[in-house]
Length: 204
Image (cartoon, rainbow, N blue to C red; front, side):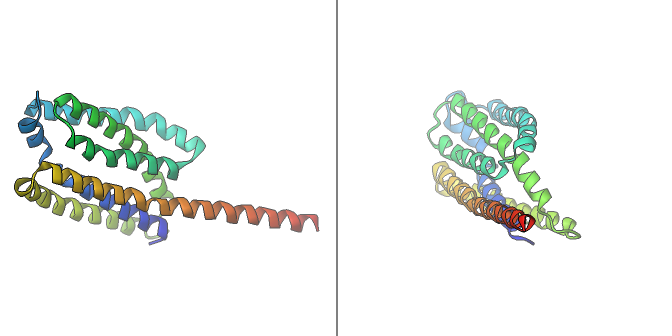
């Protein structure tokens, strides 16, 4: 498993595991703690996220394919997602959650095209199935554990602590992606040197 794949997997495991802490409790938080909060409102919040993500990622994926900058937008999108749990903390009305889910959808719409294209283009030949399975297994186990732990933390410590832990895990996952940016910068420098040497040889 090469360095790019490893960084992408570790980052996503932290991000999705962190978000997994709040997945089983968000509907309860909305119903019991917010003005206008109902089970139906919780369902609408999920709809807002999914529709926003879908509307953003399709046109954005075309932009990324033409202009690249995948690592930069992956980092930006991941940090946007990382802010969402902290927005939950200060939410007092259901409309605050709707806004948070809208922001979540924008972040996810930036992240998914970049993450998937980077992962796909850096897969090691003849190890594609194993590396996709390694990613799926790592995320699956992480989210499964987080779902149980998140519910326990929320029950005994409270929603705010759960949201803070989620945000911290997501921020760490986002920070790991800076390792990709360093690698891309080094790659550009090496390519520039290669072309410079080639031009020097051609002159000779």
